[in-house]
Amino acid sequence: MFQKVRKNRIFQDVVDQIEAAILDGKLKIGDTLPPERELRERFETSRGTLREALRVLEQKGLIEIRLGVNGGAVVRGVTTEKISENLAQLIRFQQVSLEHLAEFREGVEGSVVAFAAKRATPEDIAQLKSLLAEALTYKDQGFDSQDAFIRVDEHIHQSLARISRNPIYISILQTVHENIHAYFESFLPREPHVIEENYRDLCDIVHAVETGDDKNARRLARLHVQHFNHYMIQRKQQQK
Image (cartoon, rainbow, N blue to C red; front, side, top):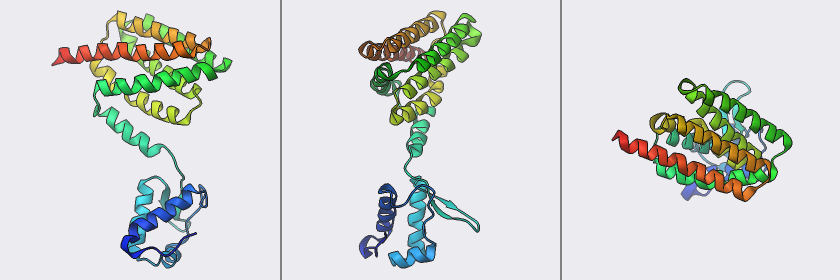
């Protein structure tokens, strides 16, 4: 599986060979790499170089270094975890502008809702309607329940991503909506008409998904993001 590494790029060669073995399926999730001494012999490299390469693979999320009698370098496989972590930090600490976040969400959430309209099952629609009923309850309770309403709004967006059946969309939008609350707390106006408009938008989007109208669902999702980004930009400018 592994070959003697080239002397002019020993460290990167070790990383590349192990990474390729994982991506090609020669190493499966849960497999343990050969012991350190065996790997050093196969690669004909030093202990320091090998350990540094393994640390890089661990940072990439491809392996996990376990200690103890049954320890070793265990294959984790390819996941979206690291991408999600980086995206979460960008959003949580507001390192992307409202405009850039809205631009991203318009495109992604428009596509997600369009796919949801094509792929939703009766069970999916029932879940969305249940979330809408919960949102209505919080909306009618007024100002003190606005945070709870916004949380349900986020759950609806995550459910639409799940209904798209696309793991990339699911992972990205879960990360976005688990961390976007800081923007809402800082910039989303809390006037009743804003929450009312939000609720109507969600109802319209769910109806388009239920009827399988993917084009209208895409349009409505994009408009929804545009409306509320406009509100937040206005609020941000007023705070200056």
